[in-house]
Length: 100
Image 1 (cartoon, one colour):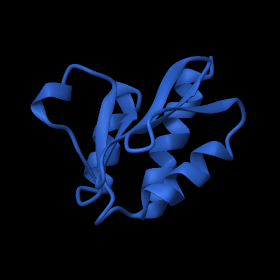
Image 2 (cartoon, helix red, strand yellow; image 1 turned 180 degrees about the horizontal axis):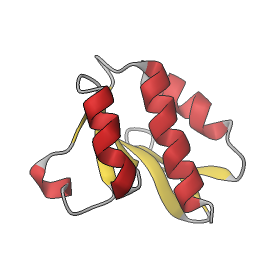
Image 3 (spheres, one colour; image 1 turned 90 degrees about the vertical axis):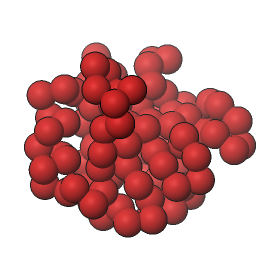
Image 4 (cartoon, one colour; image 1 turned 45 degrees about the vertical axis):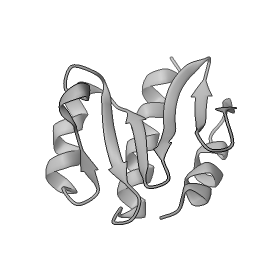
């Protein structure tokens, strides 16, 4: 999965706005973060804590939580080995959480 594919998918969701820079784009709904590109290969996706573990268990090659994010509603997705459907699911969870 590429960052361009991520952008195309996120921008297809209602009310999503792109912010950030060209090298570190981020997508928001109601000024609440959904996902941002941390580096060329890593996304940071905001997800509900009660869904995060199941994402990681179901797709350990796609997602991880570094120590700095353990207390936050976030997960990293590694684009070079990400399953596109899993990334889209995480983005959908973030969008649903943030659009309220």
